[in-house]
Amino acid sequence: MLPSFPPWLPWTHLRTCLHSQGLPIQKATRNGNSCSLAILHPPQHPAPRHFNWIVGALTTWLGLNVFLFVYYFLLFDKDKKFYYTRVVLGSALAWARASAKCLNFNSMLILLPVCRNLLSFLRGTCSCCRRTMRKQLDHNLTFHKLVAYSIALFTAVHIIAHLCNFEWYNDSQQAADGSLSSILSDLHQDEESNKWLNPIRSNNTTPAYVTFTTIPGLTGVIITVALILMVTSSMEFIRRSYFEVFWYMHHLFVIYFAGLVIHGIAGLVRGQTAESLKEHNPELCAQDPKQWDRKNKHSQCEEPEFGSIPAESWQWVLAPILLYVFERVLRFWRSQQRVVVVKAVMHPSKVLELQMHKKGFSMEVGQYIFINCPSVSCLEWHPFTLTSAPEEDFFSVHIRAAGDWTEKLNDTFQQQKPKTPRIEVDGPFGTASEDVFQYEAAMLVGAGIGVTPFASVLKSIWYKFQHADQRLKTKKAGHAAFNLDNDTDVVTGLRQKTSFGRPMWNSEFSAVATAHPRSVVGVFLCGPEALATSLQKCCHQYSSLDPRKVKFYFNKENF
Image (cartoon, rainbow, N blue to C red; front, side, top):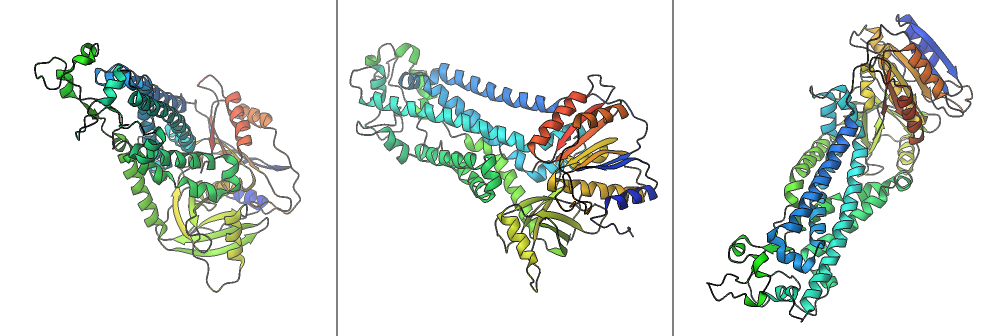
């Protein structure tokens, strides 16, 4: 039977409890908006060398994009199969097809960083995934954004190239000067066979008409509109101020992938068939197109015949789509399992605490869940860090009213109703804070409601020392900084008025580096980007170039 541990244990009480369990406190102070807990550490060991997986992964990704673009650009710019296609379209053919390959490649990758169950599996249960590599999984959303930006870039290149293609198709069709491009446009136009090169078969046909009446043109417009809406609604201002807009617009990815799969099935861009190349060498026969004879079987230059390029997008995206569908089915099944709200408490500063129980639910410190309240919105799911310890017989979250959804949720639980509102839970999912106990020294930094993951960490430390858990490597929580409200501290419950300000990070890092000259120090943050930039800069500044000396590793919560 575990001892009771109040979720909002006062700081002085926590310090006393840790002392009583034999945990040697080196320093426990409160200074302005900072609360510091320092615990004596064991003998330190040399810091191991770590490969920079971020640089390696990004270099590999960029290299593959460059390789695909250059390879397919040269293929369509030099291949004999597309000799006559280049006569009509020029280099725009290569630009369109090379960018299309890169689009397919990045569309294959875009869903993988948001497969949260896959990431949690790699982080927590995959034995071949070391800590240094596992830490890079925390950059999944950053990689997701980079891939999205590359899709937007290659889409722009693809659109511009095809706009040029449509214009040159149209010019070749309307030309009556007997040029090679004009002759090629007239080939097989009066036949029912599918051997033509130019998709524009009438002088009255305009590029705009082809755009909105053909499968590639119409799906291209739909894909582009969906992509524009997804990218613009993902801007920081819209995502934070109008989360619902971001949430609903992002689900246009279904339309994007559906359009992408069927975009190329009509085969408007064509090349010479393999059979035709045997009877018609374009590098020789292009010199005198008037000698082309499709009736004379002994002619060395029969009329060339053309075929469509097979649609390939589905081959690139099929596996990621199936993986994502499995992910969504799993999350849906898990979210339908019954959740019992054991306790709901309203704390100061509009913070709602929900203590819940769910059969088979298992968590680690620092993990987060997605919560849905059907009485507020049937479709919206929002992430919240778990504030309970794994050793407790319930799991809890603390929700601050900071938007329409959270305010409605708080109001729903504040209303006196005979029946508690139904809550659906999906998760838990892993974050950087899971590795906090893998470091001998840790610096925990929370800002605002960002203190919640470290409430779980501190409570878990108390439980582990209560039961003498030998697996606990961390013997020092170097700095837990809490940005507090005016009236009370939402974590410690202290009632005195808080003075605003930040710790002197240079002094803090210098002190930790001096106290741990040969340790690997984990720096964990749940807070704004500005603070993340400052801490990351300090991590680089105070990490020694000597692999045997102190190293700071920065970890940030990302949802």
